[in-house]
Length: 163
Image (cartoon, rainbow, N blue to C red; front, side):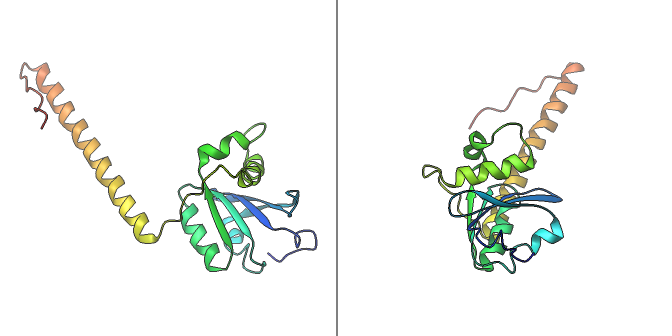
């Protein structure tokens, strides 16, 4: 995507991330939206390749850290905002378009602290913790199921004592 005359003045881009279709809103220095784009995943991956370095704002969600590293490598300044802090800035019904506009509004709030961009190793460690917690929950559920079924046959197994 090449910069058009109306978007050349854009200094900030808000991105509503999704699985397949991404909504972008570009604002100038006066916080006015000068351009909106709805892009597929392939087009989005190339969306900022030919643009001058700008501020890109996204909600901190599943794929945000990967996209943030990609855009930072292109020279852009990337900020990830916590979703619960952005929500109050979304007006009207929740749509991709209003989410992007809400991100632009939230980006100018000084009290919202940005989420640090995670490295791939940090994301890997976080993923391992998630898998471990899932395994623990499934193990507990399986043990409780077995104890419940045994109880139906008169076999009572007392719960383990807390350590």
